[in-house]
Amino acid sequence: MSGDAGAGKTTALRYYAEMNTGVIFITANACTTSATAVLSLICQQVGRQVPGRKAALMNTLVEQLVGTNRLIIIDEADHLSLDALQAVRNLNDLAGVGIVLSGNDKIYRQMKAGRRSYEFDQLRTRIVIRKKIYNDYKIEEMEAMFPGLSESCIGYLLKLAQGESLRTAKKLYNVAAEFAAAQGSTLTVRHLRDTHRQLLGGGLRMNAYITADRINEKRTAATANNSRPSAGETSVKKSYIVYHSFRCFSR
Image 1: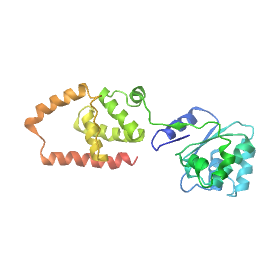
Image 2: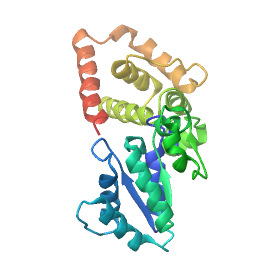
Image 3: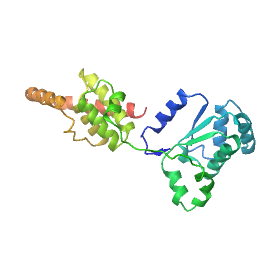
Image 4: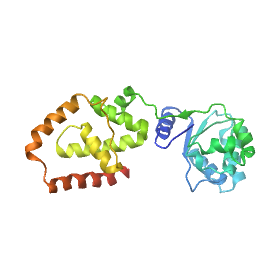
């Protein structure tokens, strides 16, 4: 499984692992690139502590997993070295377990066109299904993820998820929702757009989705023309957004 960062791969795979028995879920990172490190992570998930020797780890896992038909999901698999990938392939052959590799397109590009693509032949020829995750979310899906929002807010977040990532849309929503709550108001497109501009230096034009909210905003703006916020009030508003951007985007 491959896709851009923030497309929802990890969330989907974690949910699958939680809802199905017999699934082993591990996450690779820059410190677990070797075969020994990856096999150690899998051993931990099956409740076995083995000295850090590759052969001993492999033997233990084969003994533990053979005939179980379990599934091993390795998230962030683009961190894995060729040696680690070959160890995972060996585990698939010897124990008969299913393997899911999830990450960006780096691995598959190496398999197909890299200078050492021939070294991936044994792994590439074992791939049964390759799934590419795209940011092609639908309005119904966004409504399920952000219940209770207006049509225009859903439209804004949908366009952001499709153009950037679902992760970006969620983070922006969290900050904008807190900003709106601090004002004692319901979240509107204006909150999303202002927060977007402050955090990411942008702001989407959402004429196709701005309906009742836009009308209400114009009415509010017309009423507020006689009482524009002072420079101090504007500064407080910006400071609030920046403060919460550090707090919410670091989650």
